[in-house]
Image 1: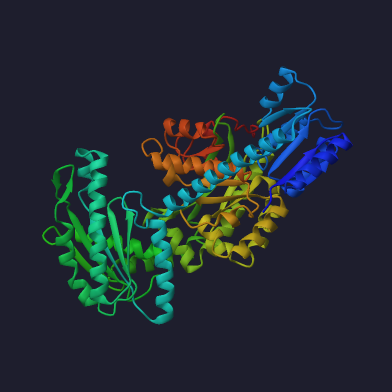
Image 2 (image 1 turned 30 degrees about the vertical axis):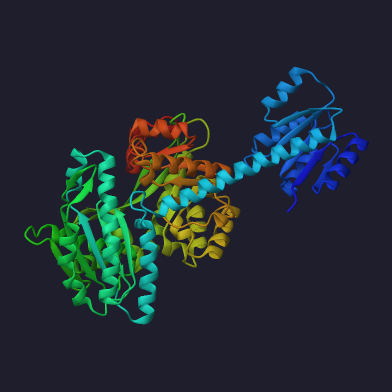
Amino acid sequence: MSARIVLAEDEPDIRQNLQRLLRLEGYEVWAGCNGREALDLIREHRPDLVISDIMMPEMTGHDLARALRVDPLFSQLPLILLTARADRQDVREGMNLGADDYLTKPFQRSELLESITSRLERAAARQRQVQQLAAQHQHRAYHDSVTELPNRSHFLLLLQATLHNSLRQGLEPMLVGVALDNLPQMMQVMPTGNINACVSNLGQRMRTLAQHLGQLTDSQVVLARTAEDRFVFLLDRSQAPHRAAEWLHPLWENCSEPLDSQGERHYPKVVVGSLWLDELPSTPDMALARLDMVLAQAQRQAARPVCAHSWQSTAELRNEFRMHNALHDALPLQELSVAYQPQVDASTRQVIGFEALMRWNHPEWGAVSPARFIPIAEDNGQIVPMGQWILEQACSQAAAWAASWAGTGSPPRVAVNLSLRQFGHPDLIRHVEQALAHSGLPPSLLELEVTEGTAMQDLAHTLQLLNRFKNMGLKLAIDDFGTGYSSLAYLKRFPLDVLKVDQSFVRNLCNDAEDRAIANAVIKLAHALDMAVIAEGVETEEQHAILLGMGCDLCQGYLFGKPTPPGDVPALRLPGFALHQTS
């Protein structure tokens, strides 16, 4: 496809000659008689290059350069300026404004064509770099960097597909986990390079074992590294679960064989566990959590750290069932509460808003971790009334802060996460409208967060719903970015305001170059799509400094404030948070 050029030139003869010349060279050309017309053409046609005279009425070439460079969509668009003046100050000003080349009239035809070719080639090279960076981010987000095996996020997607097929075909999958039990000790005495070499060797060994296991059980076997110390085999069918269970002890012996690294032999201490999914879990996360419990039991069996269980045989099932029942009563018994964690401007540390986080205090179990009860509530449907409740509470609290606001600038907005089941509920829009109407909160002070995994479940539904919310005047954010599977083609179509960098990439920013590269790529991607960026899980000044250097807009984490009951928020004395004193 031929390159597309927008031309700005106020002299009709010169404009027509340049159009004719460029079209003869095979370029698509649109021309305006001043910078204002050219800017409209640029926004309409999204060209590959702009050629502009400097001295024009209404909007000069320099003014056009300024407008392009402050617009994220066109900040990298190649720009060639034309002038009849050869003044160095004039040239310097153009270059300072971001011009890529400067031609003085009259110029030779060859000069112009060489400049165009050079600018287009550089732009194409830059685009290839962006695409390569996005591809690297995609690969790193779903593969373990040491073994190149699927990572946890990737494995959960594969497991979800297997569970779906198994439910349809009446098959019973099996998970086999291998935990490297002495990895913490190895990390204390061995350099990172040696540890990575050992883990890589162990991964290669397990690839061979996966092939053997597939032949033994007549199954398709997927191997993944789901954590630093964890490998998991997924068998798509367990028609011979007892044969697979008999294979566990030889697997343990094989994985316990020494690993060679830098001329040294290291003896891994491993535990092995299997989970036969004779009853299919509702979510992949729940299946991995149950496998973790089996491995923990194997760890307690010092003599023979190998354990085999079925889904129905695990005692945890009874505990989960009790929690499932208790969640139905949590809301009417007023056991739920809301905590607010501040989100601050990365540069000034001024509070910008708060994320509303649900808390559950059970009379018997005490404070229950959200990581434990939220998936169960999602599974049994209680997340819908619980989500509606927290939405109403958050809007009312934000409206109360806005009504008594004494600070400069806008009152703080409040961010509320929408769960997968909420996002698919037909009454969600009505719930949001009711929460705003009952509280009187301006829509601009409410931000709805959707996880990456939720957004990608039904792309057409997501696009429709987000556009409805955007038309209501709400802020929209995508949460946990990088932990699931996202299509960049759809991401750019979603009317999002904020992208949240998941804390898994922030946690090791200071000592993991790959996490730094991923975080940097995500921030640049968000800014290229005209979105602000919030980094979650910021706990240290060093992490904050790195993120600030990457251009991150907002931060959230224990460094700036823990999740806090609303009555205690003023006591945090957050910069920029000021309320009128009430009598």
